[in-house]
Image (cartoon, rainbow over all chains, first blue to last red; front, side):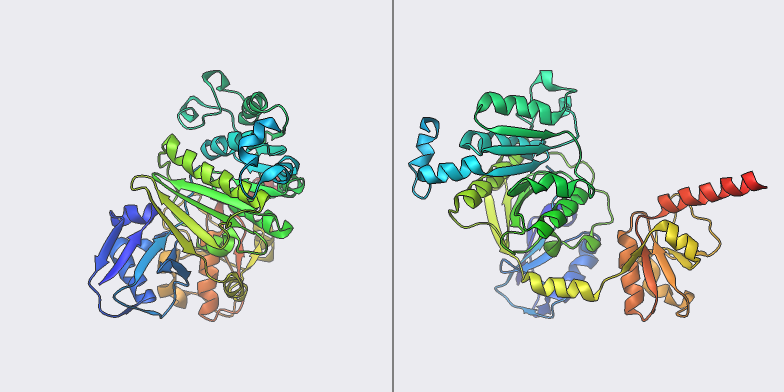
Length: 78
Length: 347
């Protein structure tokens, strides 16, 4: 189980602030691909954080059970 | 000093801290919702010199969140109305007004006289320009921005720390236009307050500055999270290896290279130059066989960002000579029209 938190326009695309995905082992890159297939997230500009630390999206880093992922788009209103 | 007594008695401030505030110069770019929250608090705290940049006039639909303005302000320049309110609030500080929009041409002059810059804009293009100017001059830029009920805050270019661009590279900008998303006054108010708080901390040298960190606040849940940014050096290195040469539309046409339009089908204006072929970015990778590696390819889109993405795809696929046009189809179309009129007048 991996927890993914969504922010800004990505939360809107996913129609949720957060969800738990039933995945065994998956890399950051694979997770982004999977979420893109689900919500089309690649059309947004965003960064990925694992346990509150922003890392490159292309990472082959394997995620584990206790990891908390966040997808962070820039905001632009003011 | 009596008016500042309640803040000078705080640990870490004192009269020397108040002196720092009085001698500091802060530029606030944008006098909208964020700016209207930032400005009165810096004024009240006794920041000696404030600059306000904004080319807009007050509109009725601004008043629910831009609390420095009154009903009588509508139609007037925001910077002048803000100056009036701030002068009445604290007559001891100087407020400089710039009733113009920040651009590549005026950014260096605007930030030159200030120690610290607050990004209270509502526009990503301006933010990149401001960020670049601040990075070059080594001036901290306090970023604040909102999306509906959520807000972000960070401090960029602080003591060699990461820039906005290193967090969100411009080349990756969303292809979708950001429609008006709606905003509640308290949301911009709170984010603006966090920005002014960072400004006071930087000036006074107290607390931990939000540099290398991105704070996100969710107003509906009162949930606040702080994310650590990666190493900016790593990301800069990555950027240089992927650099794409940019050319002006004029030069691109003069040189007579193969033009590649990567806009999606149906986007206007249509470009009908002979040496131009059309492959939308979304299907480019599947149609590379239509292009010759022996030719110089010049890519364009509507504004330049998709052209850069496409040029990177081509470079990665082994095309040796690829460039992207700065700007795009609207500029090309104008040049095309001029040439046609010229040809007509000759014949």
